[in-house]
Image (tube, rainbow, N blue to C red; front, top):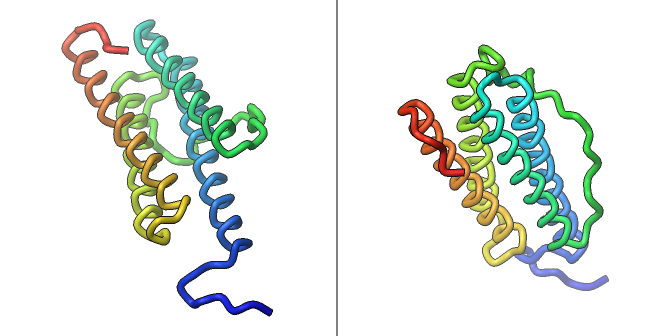
Length: 158
């Protein structure tokens, strides 16, 4: 039996932590993608349909990047029902869809930020969580800008 200092996790524990971090990241990205796909289907506004389709594509790109970076198989395209989250009051309504999308991205950023702070300094999980938190904050900011432009009748930036 080898001695492991109390502050250092075993390689098996580190692998388990990394896989848990990746699993959580996939769940959030797949959930976001499912939400955006549903929003694109339900909105009657052609510009919003385009915006949400592009956001769904971005979420798919994020899962593809995680797969490449960590040498993992691509997740299946299972449909995820997010209706239980109670984020969309009136499906298809632009204000509800924007509010829900921004809330999802902000929740994901907060979650990943908290996980980053809880992870060991210098660990791969901490770096992954920091990157994901920054990405989700960027999405929330982008959606906030798109929403303001949409309300003002201006074309979107995407």
